[in-house]
Length: 284
Image 1 (cartoon, rainbow, N blue to C red):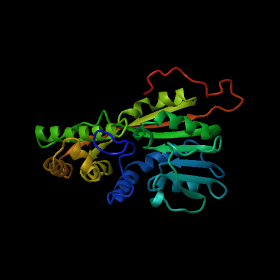
Image 2 (cartoon, one colour):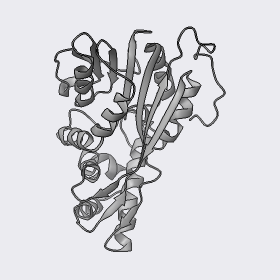
Image 3 (cartoon, rainbow, N blue to C red):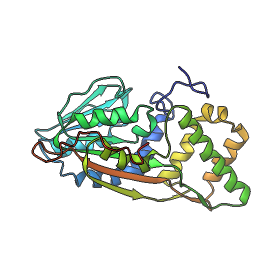
Image 4 (cartoon, helix red, strand yellow):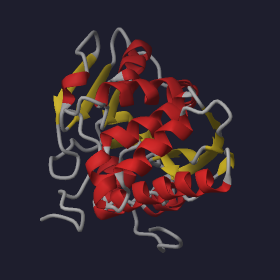
């Protein structure tokens, strides 16, 4: 089945693309420090068994492997795991989290960074991740809410409209594949509805400037998603102009809101077993 832009539904960034290495570098430079600080708050330590889904370049999995060594284990999964190196306490596995099974009650920590918002089946996958946690285990989710990422300083109003048009086209590409570029704001409620407790959401906004990791990532998207952006209505001239704009040292924009959210599967002896269906609230 194909979407209205002629592509298969699901994750829009291909790990086999010639642009994937640069995308992984941008993600690492922009977000690893924040991710590692938040993961440290879970108490992850030697002997823990961890699962990192959609591991990408494996930078998060490698950090976890150092924390759980020498007696723990990190399983890093991806549909195309060629970027993930095996190492001490780290195993890379080819795995589709939508269709492939996961062991239940097996992990002390499950990490899903920038994965679920891309998946039409995100709520079913979230339930699968919760069931993969041991009682007392923690789920860590990070996602973008792209509803807020305005240009702040541009050479002129037309440049601001161009940048906004690019962002809108990118959201259209993601939605056409079944993703929700705004889902991050609903992640905390979805985690609670899935039975987790101690939900701890932390939103973060940064400045995108020429050469910054966040803006380099946007620039990468103009190449990585070129065909899809053209199908969504942008022209080659517009792509060239927005690339020039993002290289302009006078340009700056707010980043999308990054939500970093923790949740815990209740212990067996807690009054609420944590896995009963909840009222949907604002879950999407």
